[in-house]
Structure formats: C-alpha cells, structure tokens
Image 1: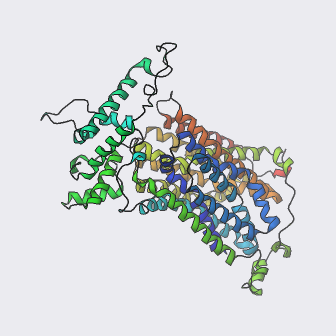
Image 2: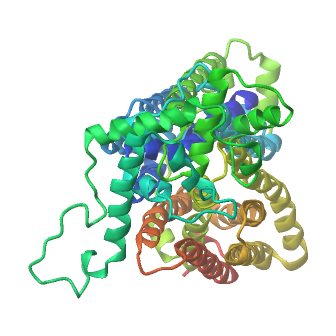
Image 3: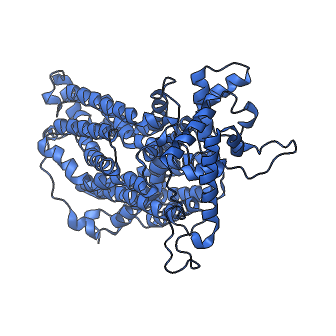
Length: 585
C-alpha cells in the first residue's frame, strides 16, 4: 500500500513540474508572450490552493479509493491535453484543470494510509510518500529534458522553415556586417562572417531588413512615445520594430540559411569553443576534432545547433518538436498508475480480499475500532482559525515561503536558457540539483526541530527553524546578485531549496502541536495560503521582467524573493506552537 502511494506521489510531481522544463519550448511553439508564460505557470497553483479543502473532503463523502483514482486519471488526462494545445486559452484551461485534479491527492491519500498503516508507523509512511513527491521533482527536469531529445531523433529534418525564424529583422541585424576586416583583409569573424557565405538574394534580404531595423532603432524620434516625435506623426509598423517581411524575401532568406546548413565547411572547429552547444552537438564537435567525418544528416543537424547557439532569440530550437510527445508519455504513465492503484487498494483492510485477520489486527492495534470507517466530518473551525495570531503568522509565512520558492520549480529553467543559453540536457541537470538539495533538507528538518524542541521547548523548537531557515534562503537569493554564471547560480538556488525544506518539518509540526482535533482543517488552511503565494508570485515576476525601467530585471526578481523570505523569517519568530489554536485569543 505504501509503495503504491509513493508511486502516486512520484507521478503527481512529475506531471506537476514537467511543463516547467519544457515551457521555453512551449512558448516558442505557441508564440506566447513572457506574461502569458508566467500566467500559465501561475494557473496550477490557483485551483490547487482554492480546492484543497473541498477536494480533500470529497474523499470522505464518496470513498477515498475511487475518488483518488478519479483524481489520478483526471490530472493525467489534462497533462496529456496540454500536449495538444494550439493556443494560450486551451493551455491555460488544461493547467487550471491539472491544479483542480491534484488538489485532493495528498489529503485523500493520507486518509487511505491512516486506515492501512499501524498507528506507530504512520509518520514513517507519510514521510515516504512526501519523499516520493520530492523524488518526482528531482526526476521531472532530467527525464523531461532527456525525452525531448529522444523524441527528436536524427531522422527529424533539421532544415529551417518559416516557423523557425522567430525574429527576421533581428536576425538580419546580427548577420549584417559592420564593414570591418581583420589584418589579412578577411571578413569580420563571428555571425557577420556568415553574411559572405549566403547567396546573393539572401544577402540582399539581410541588408534590406537589417539596415532598416538598425536605422529605425537608432533615431530617437522614430521610437514610440518619444517627446521629439511630431504630435500627429504615426510611424509605420517598421519604425516600431514590427517590420513586415515579404513572403518572397522570407523564402530567399530561408534558402540562404539552409545553404549554410548543407555546407559541412560553414563552421570551423576553432570558432565554436565558447558556444553553449547542445550535448548532441558537442558529441559531433568532438568527432570532428578527432578527424572523423559526419554523415550528411549529422552535419546539417550540427550546423543547425550552431545557428541556434549563435542566434538564441532569432532562430527556433530543433528540440521544440519534442515537448508534445513528452506530455503524452506522462499522461499515459498516470493512467497506468491509476490502474495499479485501483487494483491494489481498498478503502480499508476489511474490504481487501488478500488482507487476513492477523494483518487487520496488526493494523488496528492501538486505534479505536471505528477508525477503519470514514468518520463524520468535524465542523470547520472557522472561528478558531480567524482568532489565532500564530496561525495567521504561519499562513503569512507559508504564503511568503512559496512565493520565493516557486521560482525554482517554474521559472528556473527559462532563466537558465534565456540568460545563460544553457543546453536542454544540462539545464535539466541544473534544475534537478536544487530539488535534490531539498530532499536533504527535508530529511534533516525533522531532526532539527525535534532536537530544538527537547532543548528549548515547543515555543522555540518550532519557531526558530521556521525563522532561521527563511533567513538562510534570503541570503542565498541575495548572493545571486553577484553571480554571473550558471553553475554558481545553481549552487545558490540549491541553498534556497535546502533551507526551505529544512524548515518545512517545523511548519507541519506546529500545525500538529497547535491544531488539536482540527489538524486536517488547519493543515488544509495553511497549505491553501502557501499555494496562493505560489500563484501570486508568477504574475509579479512577469510584471518585473516586463518593466522597461529596470536595468537588471532578474536581479529585481531575486531581491523581491529575498525580501519576502526575510519577512517570513520575522513572522516565524512570533509563532507560538505551545498555544492551542482553539484556545488562543
């Protein structure tokens, strides 16, 4: 029973965070704006937060086994349906549905386990299920990145098409040579050198759009909103940076670029050392450096990867074709887990044909006999919740914690690829490392809060870990302001994840210490506020990154996250787990 629950937890987190790894490719494929991407990342947490209590109680009313299988089937179906989305509306709707379907998973699973695990083993069983979720969070970026590569095999055409040219004027601007030549009177190195390898028609397209784009951006009064612009002047789209591209010009440019792909001598080995190439391209480069010849399709694919690295914002990625089948795989895997769950589980040991009398007696030891049957739902303790100062402080702490933490599971892949142009497989590894650090924090956190409670009492044994770990996460985020390379950034993000999970056990212990007979309702309340914090964070990040007045918008994001953790740490110092919530105030 525990193994199947852990398996459910793993697939839950795989489906929850697989889109974070592929969101850069989803954005490119569906032509989404950065704001739309952040709302997509946020959507899950809104429905997940608001449906916590009703979704959990549904299992008590209708039977945990059937309801949980329905949840697994539902979120797996909606995950697969993301893979068929052709626009933002469907993408958003399916993500909202995923959050709704996953909201009751842990409460319902906890209810089932409480009937299947002896009283003395519940803590260990619950810890294993929680660990399964963290394991899923570690696996998700690695497996998603790997599968995206697998689903774009060598047989896939690497030729450029219209959809692969994301920004024609910007590409032409970068290809247009400035006129300099080196000491041997050779064309300028770098992207400008490629201009001289294009066909004549393609060179004319590059000159036409690149020159006009550069001129339009260099004249102040031609920009939108400039005070020097005449009052009644309405600039054409080209002046605003939206240069319309003639279809014939586009085909001429594509023909020239594909000519570069088909030429094995387009790029020399010595000029590729500083590019962030995909791992597949690195293997091709290593073979060429050993003097091996690449097959024609390998050479074309190799050149495509180089163009993607040279022009990350102008040329689309070949691996963009892999994100849809990955989601289909995860959806199908969820259906398999649902079938296993339905086959193995029953609502109670008494209903299971393979559970004998001795096992039922062992499970029931130390518990009231009626605990095998769903108990009547306790009234929701609304008045006690609203009067509890410590619970409000804890709710604020969970809100702020998830606000700062959610960057690591939704926006970190995009940050690494957009800021550092990290290849997809390396990005998957970098994203999984912080989640692995979180597992270490989760293991140590329970030990930490228990030791402090024995030495300092329950007041500080819970409050200090909730405070100091958040200060540690804030320091890690502040360190990102001085980091300018991906691997040191990964170390800093790992510290954030570690400190967050190091304090998680103290949060849950506070709920159990002060919740009395209303622990389930109190846990649901706090979890709701935590996920609202995660939902709010992504639109805030989008607004910051869209601001034109900030010179370092990503640094502003890190600063906001750090300040939020400082505030949550201060709140933690005032939380008193020694006062029962029902009696407080």
